[in-house]
Image 1: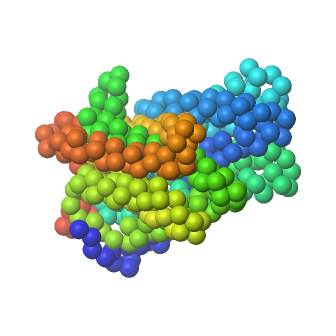
Image 2: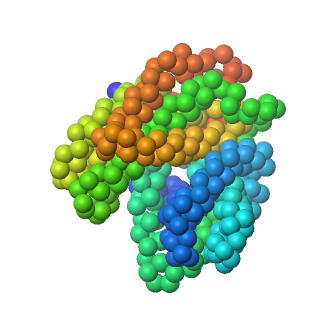
Image 3: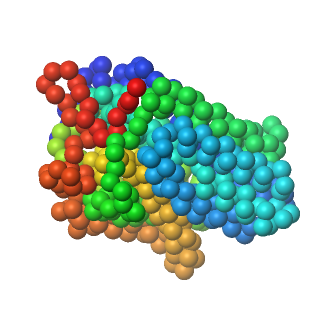
Length: 426
């Protein structure tokens, strides 16, 4: 059930909160190197005279290293605080990409080592920002709206980032673009960690356990579902390329991706203008159902204009699904593991997306473009099935001490108070 949010409760209200605009902007800029990493590596390798096979290998190594590093660094943030982890990681990641830019691809071992370092030390700024929102915004409704704004901002970054990279390449070179983008990433991380909320944030005490955030059954269920959401999205990118090839117009691919992003932007903005009642776990199942339903029509593969409309429709529920998932992660993360839990979501989504791209390629070659889009529809349906099958463990336990039992945000009748397990200490 949704009700219209009061005018004062929109995104501008969030951005006017002390430190909020700085934290959001710094996080987005800090994530630029990772957001455009695969494209930047491809352009650099081709400029060096390397093959697409080499570019694909380096991108795969970078992606695997990032997937490994995110939850490990997220756990380190929960244990050591944000500045002591985020900034050194950003510097090391940038140095890895700088090594690639300066040494080229002549020595393959060095090139692979460079991208592994860059990926492994990609700072978990995304999870760190979501851990900070409760202490910055206080009220539960504002935090939930910030999650929606976060999802919308991601779509903006993934649209603006490649354009910025292309501009830098046209002005200088792919190597220079790698250096500039990663310098901006360090500056973004610096802006975040020098802010008061980041410097003073401390994770709640945590139970020592080697599984960390993964000991929560509810979180595992969510991650399982989002693996297939990522798979669906990754398969769309490959299938869209095949669709453009079928039409003999490569530019169609760009229009389809732009339409997908536009749909996600509109969906996220609409979702964030409302206050939602009821359990977010139940709402997430409905949103994933709608997401899967909007992926299915892509198999019709009509003409470019109609296909762009279907792509926009396919994107509408992506940002709302992400925003709702952030709330569910927050509710199910064991005490003291919130950054790690958010980082696991990033990793699972990324691995699923990579596998979706890998599966869609052979599907297109064996059965055509329709099969590629069918992978997306199947991924959405399996994501929904996981949520339905695991409905019991996704219910937030009421027994104190159980992972996810403690409410992450509570709003009293009087002045708004936050009982989020991550607290701001001075």
